[in-house]
Length: 369
Image (cartoon, rainbow, N blue to C red; front, side, top):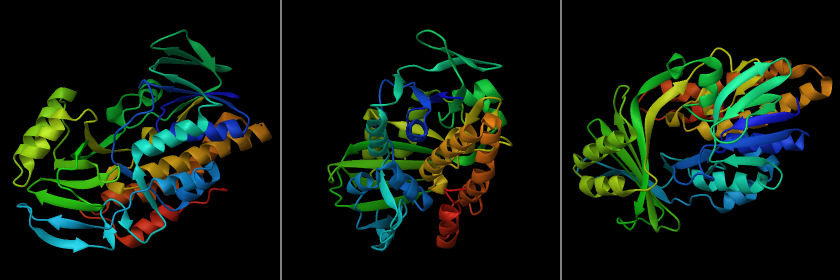
């Protein structure tokens, strides 16, 4: 089991590729986008995930590009400040923590640059079919010839193609959490200086944080809704309409959402599965156990899962126990960690998780099995 195809070139996939390469495997990463994806919200590297980043050789670089927030303001619907904190922010938690908050696009860039010299990347491509046989998996691609691999790993997110092809339709595993999140960028029209703003107005609200030395803003806009079937253009229009109805800067934010080249919107949902593997195919990160951004732990779980999966495959290779044993060990080690972290988003919906719950969830794992 030396050749491994990894679907997904975001964070989990390249980190898995790095560690597989270190263990003597031959990883290939296929990514639908034409290159490393830009845009997205700030993400957190917490607890045991910091150890993964350190072992991967990226800790100092991650620290160098971390956000430098001084605090946050909580606003009423009319924009009047009702509370402020210089001790914590909703996006990153306590400001005196060792945890690292950074832009998702910076972390994606870092892991790609760290791996591109010794990992094969197939950008602008995707898997269209999987056919497992006795000695491997035959893979068809949207572009180019079919190829055979010993193993296939789906690290391709909430709407995983690998999961659909190997396990069945998304609706069998996705659990909607009652809201949607949109993220987009614009210029710093509020002149924020390392300071966040959070506002709620009815069933919608947003967080605004400055990035890139306070030259830009990233807006995370959330709204309550059941599952929607909108096409991407219609979903953007819905977000624009909802922003327009806000009483404070709604029209300005609506224009930004309409014009943003990095506009993103998706459901807050979790993926829950009885098993993360089937035959020679396994799932990693959001593809197998998305906790939703409401947990604040999606990136950390993905980093830890990548490290643990590579370690389990390496141990199985050394003992010649096979991929089935490796996948079983991966689930044994990861599932309690995933369960605790998914609970951060579901045990008290609509409220931030307690510090005690977060601390327990982010550290409930030993990387060394």
